[in-house]
Length: 142
Length: 236
Image (cartoon, rainbow over all chains, first blue to last red; front, side):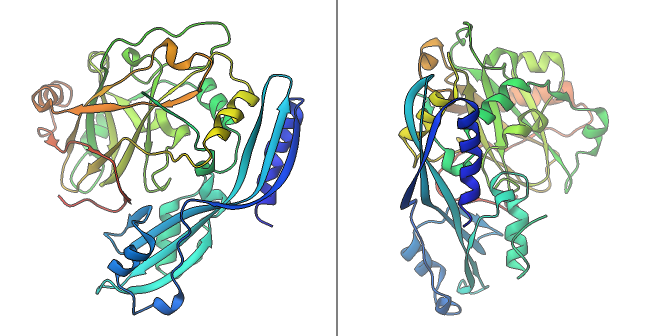
C-alpha cells in the first residue's frame, strides 16, 4: 500500500507536461536485502552480522547501531511525451534494517522498518529516528 | 570524469525536476559569519570549520539559451555547488540548506576561496556538484535517471569536527570544475571529483586575519569517504 502514494506525484507531473504515463507493476530490489532474525538477539556478534550482511550503509553511536538500506520496487512508470525520448523509471519503497549491539558487541535488538516518508524526503531527522529507535520509542520523527 | 546523477531512488521518488527548480530558482547569497558567532565558537559548542575551494583549472563559462543553472557559493567556482549531508539527513545531501550551511568571512577571504561552516561536533559529508543543462525538461531528466536506477549518491569527503576545537581547518579542496562539454546534451547534475591539499599555514594566516580573537585552527583534513557513513562524535 505504501508505494501507491509514490506514484501520485510523477503521474500528476507527467499529466501536467502533456506526457503519457503508464504504471507497470514491478517486483525487485535495489541494493542488498539484509535479514537478521530476532532470534539472533543476544547471540549473534557484530562480526557475524557483518559476515552475513556486509558492511552497513551507516554506523551510529560509536558503532552501537548499524543501519542497512535497500529498496523494493513494486511499480515502474513508463513516460512518453512530445519533448523527448521515452523514459522508464522506478518507484521504490525504502526499507531499513536497524541492528543495535550491546556492550559486548552482541545483537541487543534488530528490526526491519519502512523508512518514514518525512525522513526519506528530508523533512524529519534521520538521526532522531535512530535515536528514538535505540531507546525503544516510535520510529516516526515529528 | 564527473559522475552522472541518477540517484532518484536514494532520495525518494520525487522527480528530479523539482530539485532542479529548487536549486536553480532559489539561489541565495551566503550569510557572513557574525562577530557573535565567532565569539560563541568554543569547545563543546559550535566550531568554525575552515576550508578552501578552488577549481583545478578555470571553469569555462556556461551560457546559452535555456540553460538552467546557478552560480556557486564561491564566485570563482562557476556553477559548482557545495552541499553537506549530516546526521539529520542520514548523510544524504541537504540540497535546500546548501546556502545556509556555508558562511563567508570577508570578501577577501571569499575571493581566495575560503569558506566557513559553523557546526557542533560530529561528522559531515561533503558533496561537490554542478547543476546545469542545455535543455532541462521533465522527460530528459527522467530519462537520465532511468538509465542507472541503482546508482548510489556518494559523498566525496567526510569532514570531522571533534569536540574541544574552536577552529578546525578541514583542507584545501581542488575541484575538477565542469566545462561546457560536460553538460552538452547530457546530464543535468554532475558529482565532481576533487582532491585535497594541506595548506595549514595559509589557513592559519586566514584565521589570524579574519578571526583574531580565536586560537589558531586545528588541522583535521577531510577524509575521502568510503565505506559506511559514520555518525556521532569523532574522537579528539
